[in-house]
Length: 556
Image 1 (cartoon, helix red, strand yellow):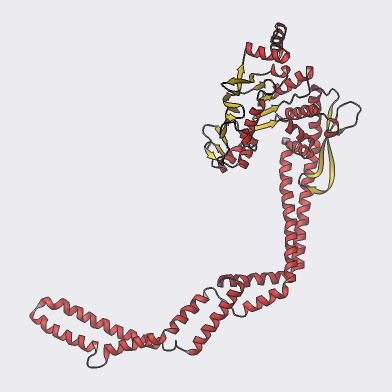
Image 2 (cartoon, one colour; image 1 turned 60 degrees about the horizontal axis):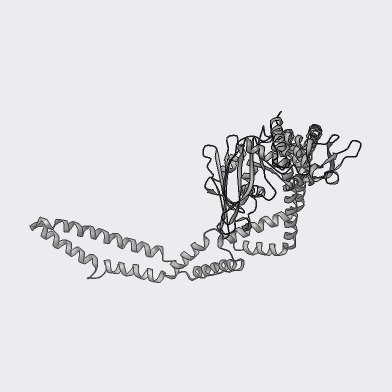
């Protein structure tokens, strides 16, 4: 339910806060008073496009906010808000939208920024708006199938068909894509075979390039490393001035000192350890020379350089890394293999597409059957309501024309036909219904669907255009009945409808200083009588008396 609407600096509205309740709320006022501004403000909350022309002259920014009670909201909205990371605080949702002459337009839902597309999705759960544009939707036959499929008995079948149709389209798309790819591969077969053989011929392995470069680096320094190891051995163990001979002499001297001074003992221990380490070093250098003795093989060096050159040439040619080159090889292998089995693969894709088509048709047949069954009941109920809305002989008929191929909406084209006079043929709405008649047909449809409609708020913008008298009373009663299951807001010029309101708001203009502003007053008691009298033609005693009578009798 819409609990509060706040508007600031929007067109003629300087600042306005309106509080709403459940039931039937009516907006009246003279032409040009600013009722359309209220509709525009609500439209902004529903994700309508904003224009800087909406901003009040002399200001840089306009703001609209709405507070909604989410006590009985659909789970779908809660899921959507969850996806947008919007918290729901005590079942309340506050939408705030700012329109700026600069680039500071903002949409906040419970203080969380959201994009315009998401606001539209949120709005679809909150308010069902019906104005002159919405009435024209009935002239679009795509809307007819949407209405039939919104029937609770039909919606599950439509969902199942949508899934089957998606799978069918996916199967067709997969088949077409494979055929195109197969054709492209066939045209490039010789090139693919050459590339495959070229890469295969050198037998690549993951990590090979790094290993080759490391080995080559070792090979290029073999002379220096061998020389160093040999020289260490020479220094350690050969000649009268070798390290081992000198350290041994030091040990003997320390052994003598220890006999006279025990404090020298740690040094003797360290020297003995050093002699052991030097012996191990000499052994290591000998082994190192034996192990690296063959690394400087010129043939091995030539092989390494040639191997690296081949790898680097192919990497440069195909503009990839070594891993990318190996990946390309495997992809070429797959592509060439697929060419060998292309006919069998196409046959498999065609088989899947045919199966998907059968499933889609079966699901479509189920949908058609349930549509036709419940369309008969729907037509009867709409026709019954139409008779209370000025169509004494009016009837609605849902026509189902079989299609040769599945479409996004099923296996048939659905069209609403209407008979406005007994004995006349059923014709499409565009050929037989006036604007006012289309408005009443929409009202009849909403009345029938209201039992299952879970959008909590309905707004009718001058749906009473082109009607009056007893018919206006019947239209008002139909909307009043809708307000028992929905919060209903309506802009009207007709006293027959206004008199039924649970809550009456009058939109009017007034001068404030040198400016004109639009304001809204909540009417009750005598104020409501005065407004109904104005709508009757004036504030004479007769019209005031008539207004009281109308209000008193309205809901009886």
